[in-house]
Length: 426
Image 1 (cartoon, helix red, strand yellow):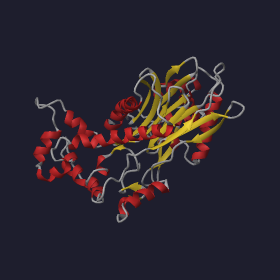
Image 2: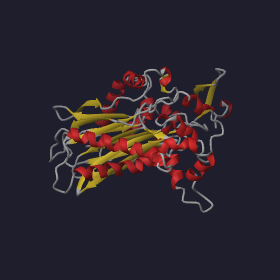
Image 3: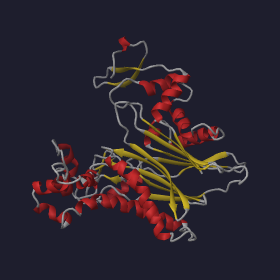
Image 4: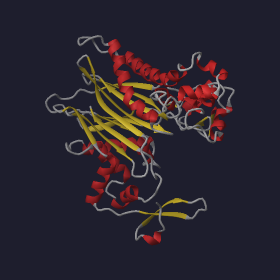
């Protein structure tokens, strides 16, 4: 927990108390050796090799320095086997309010995408879908996955949402709280819990020939593609996604256009004045009529002791949905590589917004350029985890004192956002 500076020789002024007196918290200055060990322990770097001969791999880290807090970020790095052809699926997911929906999404979404591919690729010799069709397939798979979250709950009540006014609280509780006392395995309860929470989603799909890349986005994570220039060096980069939050005027205008007579549809840069992402998976209270939350979710164990915060935004919920589950999907042709030397390899960075928050005070363009420089500098080092390298750069690079402050503060609550990074060599 935060301590008085008199009990420690080293302290850092980190935040401000409500009375404007400085909040000073103890931290531990680390040596280079200790810092490397601490970062490795906290970030848990992973490397997945898809094709060692061609250098196709993905490095990942999931970082949250507050040991008393469980991260709500998740990531996926895997291959989807579609009739013997290997599609590469990577993704980062930033959960909010709880981890049930983000956990569900990280596990099930790759399965849904694989099933969607198997419907259009009918056998080992069948051609891959054209890029534009693949964009539609990926978009539809994500939207259908999200629709099923609330849809599976409404199917528990014959007549759907129109039937809820005629049911008592006890009847609804009997359906959704199906656990304990030999009344069931909790399947209904697990379905209903998914509606309480939400997650952003940023996923990338690469075809078996490694000629095409698709990136689908819901929310405010970041995707940057780093590609070689004419000289073969990594000298070009591109931000692939727009942000689906209140900083994007187009997103604000979209919600207001869909709800023209509702000035409270967006307040203070948040949907219904409450939630930051304008597109995401889950978050049923912002996608279903208010009666869904009041009758179903309020009756979900253990209940809602104080509905006042909920009612603040539910009173504004007149014509849902307010949050979209339709992703933006972009396609890029990947530049060819040398079969003998591997020259011309591209890299994709996927990161939750915890990484961009470490670049406070810089533009997205400046941030992306720094990521590209970092990856370019480290790409020739075969043993170094590129995601860990990028995390360290964002935390302070070679400034041991700055990084020590970020990773060893003694506080009960998180002082930085969950930060998840994938750096994929394409």
